[in-house]
Length: 224
Image (cartoon, rainbow, N blue to C red; front, top):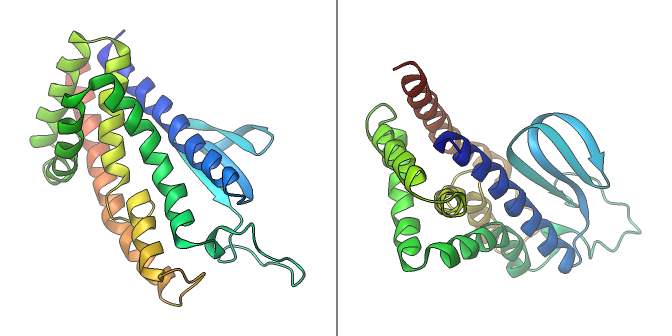
């Protein structure tokens, strides 16, 4: 299997595990799930509360939340995400990272932990230099894929994606955990929406930079 295809399949598999782990944790804690989204873009079909979308490279979990919907007066709200104890809110978010991270570390062993801790700096340095540093990191990943089985390629990709999701930016698990801690257990605070929007910007910048780097790498690979 071509290395680029291996990494694309790894991203899809990571997304499924990432979103499913959060959904299972929420359900175990008694939090109502409104929708589980696998992928982005137009919806293709629904399976219960799960929605399969066109592009399978991201996902979403929509929970019952008074910040997003009106709750009836006779609703006790004990199944509402943002009114649960802080540790439960954080547990849902951490499960989306902890489960694929545990799988990856189990497959890669001690070397996996080093790859995970190094990934935080790699994500930022690569985003700051998409046409140089990121290109070398992508080349290293391709070399790894050529020399190892798909299961190890998935493990390596999971480590990097876990680190990315823990960055303290809006839309990522790390940013959501940061906001939950800042709320100090309160269901809602007036400043949260504004702060969340500002935190979204650096996360989008990092993501777009890596998309640029990946696109340029693939262009050079297939046209060079």
